[in-house]
Length: 87
Image (cartoon, rainbow, N blue to C red):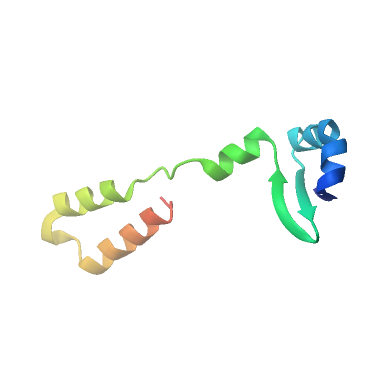
């Protein structure tokens, strides 16, 4: 569930908002109608901040190792997917 609170309310209810984030909810902190921060649990944060599993540099090495057997269009697709963090 997503909760929106003002910055003053977030200050006064911080302990409660942290419990909500810990259980999986997201808390959006607003100031004058603008989003200024998001409070989320550590598990959800880890999902957003993890490094892509496939490094684009490794995709380039794989293409070079494959030699001329891999078409350049396939290489471009692999590189684009790797840069977006897709396997």
